[in-house]
Amino acid sequence: MTTMHTQVPAPESYAWPERLVSCGKLIFVGLMMGAAFAASPASAASFDCRKASSADEHAICSNDELSGLDDAMAAGFREARRQAPAVVKPLSRSLLAERRACGADIDCLKMTMTKAVGAYKSIILGESVDGARKDKVYYGTRAGMQVSVVSRSGIDTSRAVIQVEHRREDAVAFCRDYVQNVTDKCVQDELAIDLQNKFTGDCKTGRFTTITGQSYVFFGRNTATNAGTMGNDFVLIDPDTNEPLDGSMASGYPVAIDQFKELCPTRVR
Image 1: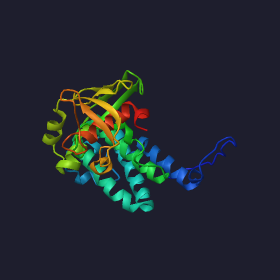
Image 2 (image 1 turned 90 degrees about the horizontal axis):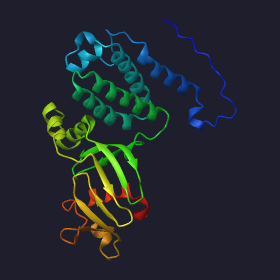
Image 3 (image 1 turned 135 degrees about the horizontal axis):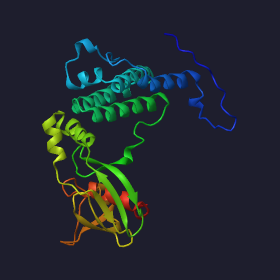
């Protein structure tokens, strides 16, 4: 089947970055995104449906939309690998692990596969793949101990609130990055952890409560001569003991200060 492409000149008022002027890239990205709507449910571009063995593969081969997303993923992977092989190799392993963890869950597969298409698109267009990093916040000191940001309100005020969700993709990140084995049990155990659905702060007084429900008070910049060595550039006080946290992972300082920075960014400049 032959596909016709017609070039439409962009209005002069458009200020396209130089890298987006490349016609070849623009056409490719359009094809990659459009593939999600033109695939056969009995085929998949990244693997042979006749040899499908895992739950996610069977689900993809029996669903029109997932099959189309798989075609788009495969096209994006090929082009992104051509441009940045060192980046794409570990990224593709991570994305595949997330897809595998979904099993036959259609909604989960759609979410993770759409995320993969977006990641490859970012590489192709020269954008940062980590552009959405601030939509994830760590609740613990181990790799992958993260939650997803849902909304922000009152930032830098006395009523700063960041709503969060502990999603399946977050649990997969922990199992992948810390446990180094993504299994259903690992994912379910991680999702069962009791976490708050928000963390809050009073940016005027400096008192804030973390995702794990711990309260601290921000005292400002640490002027001690060993502050840089210890890693605690700012002073955080435990209000129950009136003792400061040192900069170690065991004290919880790195996680707590990062959450305060999200709530009250102007206080830590």
